[in-house]
Image 1 (tube, rainbow, N blue to C red):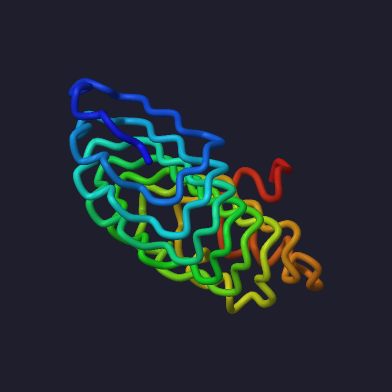
Image 2: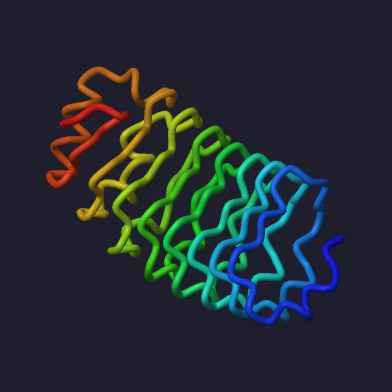
Length: 181
């Protein structure tokens, strides 16, 4: 449990990395927070972030999160790291109007939705998941502003013509699977 933050009204960076945090709570007093690091904890849900409207970076990697949720009040969020969780469907991201980088490596993702709605998104890392077909990438292909995309380690990356199909759909891409286009 995180406590006594109400005495820190100007806090902008909070690193709770590699603790035993199970629930995000008691953060309502630190509305100035810009960076929240909660990687390598025991979180199962994304919650308790409603008052953190100035948050710029949210790192929740290596937890037990299965659903992307409760991010609607984060208009300034630029970087979201959800790598190493239990997420199966990418959705509920369309309200993140400032998001430029999304890390979803090492999850259980079979479906990607709502990425076309994020015109600011430039970098998406979705390696080592369960994306099995080009149809599963449709939402990604509809985001024409992507500059960097990583899909290696997904079954679709073994498909015949994979690289060319991705490049044909994303003309502005500069890096695919960490290789220059």
